[in-house]
Length: 91
Image 1 (spheres, helix red, strand yellow):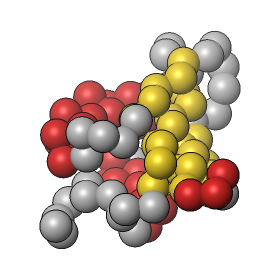
Image 2 (cartoon, rainbow, N blue to C red):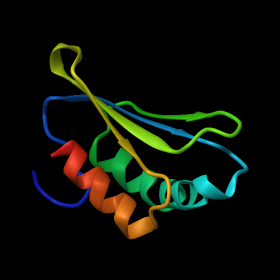
Image 3 (cartoon, rainbow, N blue to C red):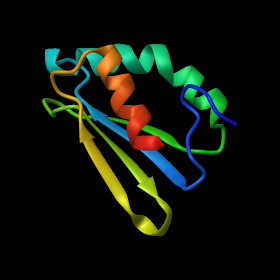
């Protein structure tokens, strides 16, 4: 299966860390409101976690097989740049 937000087979978890009120996490919040339903519908067995904490910079982690993790900072990115970073991370 290919297409937008289709994760590769080895991806075990996608985890977003962001602040629920700060301006530097606003683009990540709006991206998640828009894209989360599609990501979850296309990857129903992959956990997509959203962790909120006060005044942290937005980041996303992808956990792959054998415990390997990759992190991408999302601070300062707009919605389309966040989408591009997520696509690169999960492929």
